[in-house]
Amino acid sequence: MPSTPESLQKFVRYCQQHLKGDEKGESQNFLDRFFQAFGHEGAIEAGATLEERVKKGSKKGNTGFADLAWKPHLLIEMKKRGEDLNKHYAQAVTYWMQLQCPSSNDDLLEKLLSLNLELAEKEKQGESVVGQWAPANAET
Image (cartoon, rainbow, N blue to C red; front, side, top):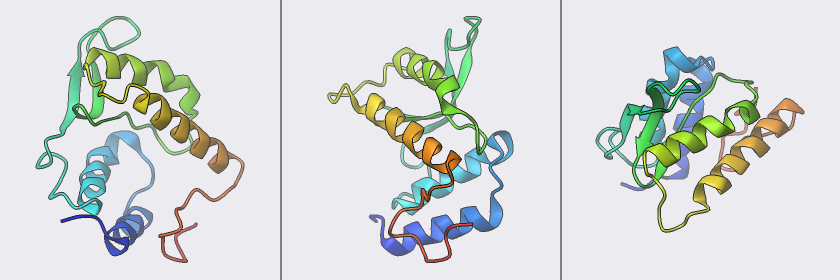
């Protein structure tokens, strides 16, 4: 089943009501609901892997853990709300390359990271980062 404005609004409402922005405690719940909003039963049912092990993914060359890998479509590395995403750019690129996620559209990662950084900067400046499809009371 594809996503609908209603399924996306339901996701936004759920996040506003139940999630505070804690990476460790809420990321898997957020990701599962995120996939549901886009018409999947859940992240795992869509073929994604939560906490994907990334060999030599840490700064020290140890194993890292990507919050979600949905090869070759998507890598999600979550950070707590308000975190400066510029500090984590290299981590996301390393995970992406180590997991060999690049698709035929090689600049997809760059676009996604640029969008995330742009949204984080807007949020930091107090600008709205809520999509047009969101309910009127979506901004807090």
